Image (cartoon, rainbow over all chains, first blue to last red; front, side, top):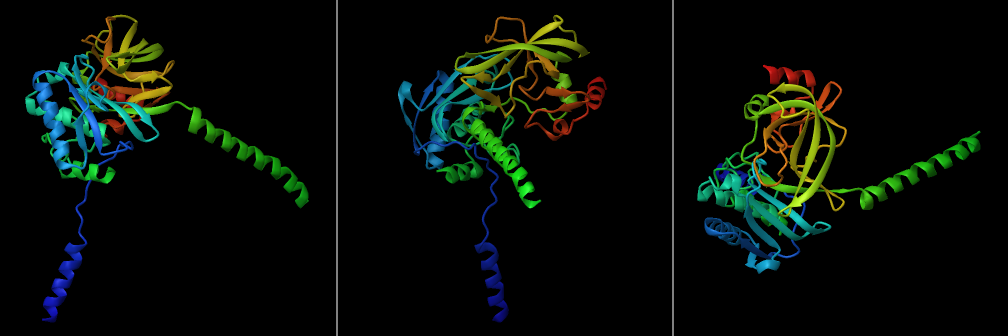
Length: 170
Length: 183
């Protein structure tokens, strides 16, 4: 009986105090509220994937991206910038201290026109992650986080690590 | 004796604290701030060999001047670079144009993965591709991997870009870099 109690006690100590090791990195900027307006100012499949990405963040995190039209806090557009070696870019165009007031996302169709819908979604969801306040996370590999820095990522929705990152911010 | 030392220490201490205060005020309020742009890149290069395969031209050169403007809300900088030595490929002229994302706008350094655009009068080893796109009509090149193929040169030492793979981040000798390029 003593042995069993000791074993149970140890198990409680080991597993009770266990917390998953997360690797997310924060960008150092955040919105003043979890309710953030957005607009997907795009066309065709780009709009679909932008909406899918937005829904993913809304479903899995405390962030609530709501449609805000042309004055939205986060605006996502698609255009051809040529072979500049980025497929997506998030520019915090207005900040006050560490508070984000406006974030502009550009998707570079020079690359993404030849991507699958899922890869496009990955790029847009990644950029939305930046706009919310996440930085790159490469230590978990291609499948560890949607915030993996290059388009070789094999996940296209926020993972547990990405979600933990957003939870740490808001 | 002690009074004499105290007398000398006092102005030194005031000078030191004053310099610290001025430096602090400058860096807090007046020095250009860095704003990093979050990108998703098509490819991460793991070593010189990979950069080499992707490059149309590899040179060592000096930045002469540069201009920055916004294209569809994104800052871009076009630098004129005087070609010093050609390490691979054939440049279109002795002075080439290199287009980079980022630059100095509205008193801020806009960076990609914390990499600033090239500085004026600075030497670099550059892995370049011919630019194809609408951001500029001028015949120009872009750096392979946005920032990954840009090494700042100081004498015989090179500084690799920030946020690159181990195979590039460890390069510090210009001779080693050139040997790897010519391999």
